[in-house]
Length: 299
Image (cartoon, rainbow, N blue to C red; front, side, top):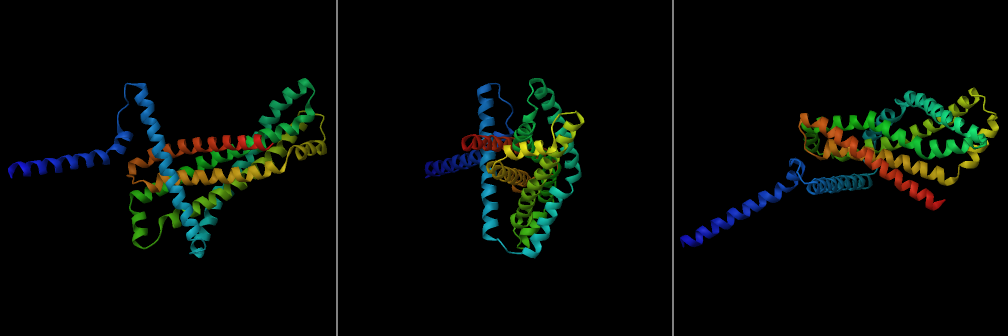
């Protein structure tokens, strides 16, 4: 009997140890010191990447499910929150974006005029503006600036609310934190990013011609805008809308995930903000590359 009890106690100890190992496996991947072998180093960061993609993807599916299942509920509460996020992600940033549109037009036109005038191809100035500003730089610059100004604020606000117990208080009151905190940010940031991109592109196109006029480029306004109209197709408008809305949604999802979905202490909020910014930049660049492939195949 003593041998049987010893065997049972040994099996219980081994099961307890295996549970501890399984529970700390994920934490070890994130907290382990840098290994000496480059293979292990790359493998550990690869698994960290997979865990992050899994977490953000699950959080995005949960948010989408809440948006669809609770669509129209508590509209008197959510609509002011969405308008607040649109104002924060769009209206308040408009003066800065108008200034950046003038700078962007100067940079693109200044470089394009210097090169096109050498080969006598000034008539392609509108085409250059469409390719550089409308298709690439406009949406990407807008996404990066929205991430820097608003995305970081999302991580700090939600991370602080999570660390101080405000999220648990909402749950105790029967309020879904995703519906109350995440959905307005996703909708507002998507709409605000789209609107800011449109303003940035329009400002850059207009300021581009102003800078070309100041450089004595022999190009009339009607010729310039005819070049722009001839270079734009319906694919450009469709992909521009989809790309900017995708950028805004991705930035909101990643920043809300790092601020809300993970338990944080106050001293960990700054590190979570850095991780969120880095991952949002990578996600936006990958999405932009996917849209480039779609455009090239559709064109």
